[in-house]
Figure 1 (cartoon, rainbow, N blue to C red):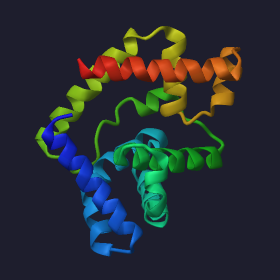
Figure 2 (cartoon, rainbow, N blue to C red):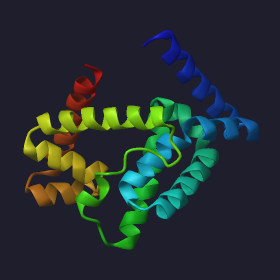
Figure 3 (cartoon, rainbow, N blue to C red):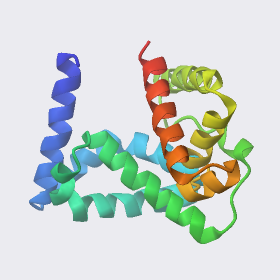
Length: 185
């Protein structure tokens, strides 16, 4: 990691620690620093702006209420918060009982109100991610899209692919590792 990445990581961890102590100004700063990314995660899963806003609000309530548990997870601050936001959005999708077609999720790249520079960066990253996804074997790509874009459970994905649950977990873990390596190049 570079010095800038380390200081950003430390800043987020500090904000979460202060939230655990009930510091509302730290929570406001944490929200400002992370809301665009968490909104994008919620929007990718839910597809609708209003539903994503509701899910994001619920996710931030969970972040506030569970800030004291952050260090127990061993994840980076963004990974921890993205997981909360994603799971909150997935819970809403499951509550609706109607999964959208994957094509409905393809055009959502960034939070509304992004600057032209942010939109260009998001589009570039989305293009890179699409290229990295395309490089994966079909079954791994379908598993990753099912889990992270459609909100399907590992058990649902394993049933759909006709493989054991542990095989599906391995596919997802290895697929994410391959994506991370591809995106870092």
